[in-house]
Image: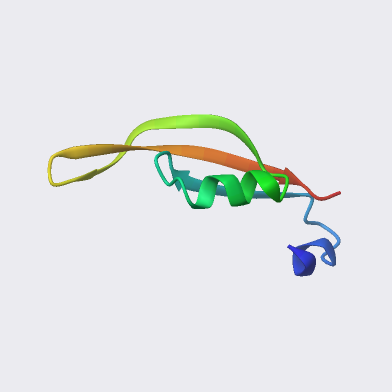
Length: 60
């Protein structure tokens, strides 16, 4: 995040996490990321679907 802030043209950081990633989500929210969308059924593993939460952080 600090490195991205030093790059002139970078204004927003984007990431996605599996919705039920209960360890990562609070960390990203604590860092200031916000959820802006959910991509349903983004991944499938062993006949189970996983939703993604798309997150962003405005750095400039």
